[in-house]
Length: 222
Length: 254
Image (tube, rainbow over all chains, first blue to last red; front, side, top):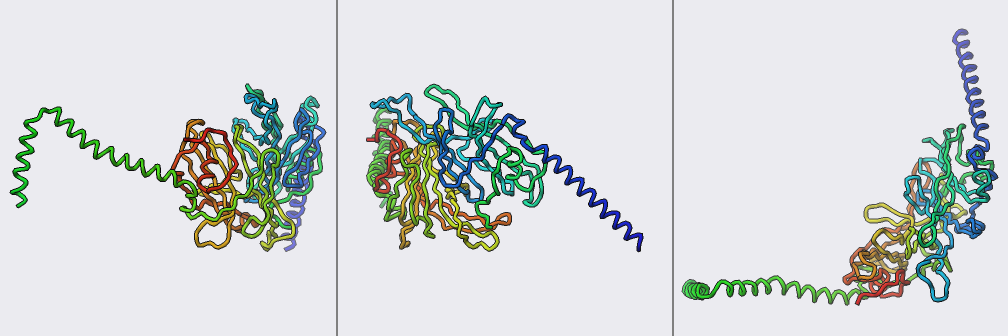
């Protein structure tokens, strides 16, 4: 009987040591994640809150013009964003007044394969994910005060599990065309966190050194 | 009796035929072919032109009636328009406009419902509200969040109404109409397809341990306009007998 007790005690101690080791390793890994964005040429980040349906964002483009970010919930409970910018169009259609018509253009998101979509949302993999808009300096300050957005997706099946987080950072870009320029968001850099996290927001705060606040599910209660 | 009459007639016809040269016979055959094939086509064409006139207000023939048009936002002067008490449950909606798709003339709209957030444990509404985008489902069940996107080779026009989706309904309901024109040539008239959507009331369902909300525009009527149009919004204006903002300056078909 006492032998059995001895075994149990040994097991418990072993379990505790293993758990402490895992915690230690996880903490070490999370320390590695601290400001990991800076190692990828993204520095001095600040979070852009989007409290309303339509949010005016000043100094969005390099020419100083602003943009609007529409923040809504999709039917499946995820946040969905649309970014629009006022843009002169029709360089080839001269108005009699000399003015060009102005449109509120949706800025599309172009993936690495060149496919474009108009809406921004985190992947739907069964857990609360996060999209955050930030203002940051890119390329060691060569591209200063840029609006970027980050998708943070936890690679996990259950909400309660700790898991690594995949980050993809998108930057605003323009491409000259015959009668003007095309504007779009394109991936700038992507990586996976070293540590495991219980929420995508926690991982984002750690990697970018910003305060984002708790995640909110579009349909979730208190 | 029949035999007595028909036998001389056949004999006469045979003799006449054998007396005439082959080309005269061919001319006579052609005449009959023209009567049999071309006349029905001409009659159908006349019927078609009658239908073309009937496009005006023809939505009523498809069970869509008593329409009140809701203004859509203009870009960029007024990018968001609020419509109070729009949904069946009385919630307000905001219509947000942009232009997307990287092409000209492509007005794009999000219809957003301001509805209470739900307690995910009880499914009951809370004080806080969220802005939920109302998706538009097609007949196959696929849905999209934005409407008015210009598809490749097509041009669309969008109108939002309050009206009746079936003759028996008493109250005005939220309706959406989308006219899509096949754009073979921007300056030539082409067929226009009209789809009318009804706003399905909010359904609450559980998915992955949380309550989700689904308000959706679902198609309730679909038809092709009888005449061809040079502008999808012209088709909407004619079919619904309403004034709809034009999306594309194009010469109206004569």
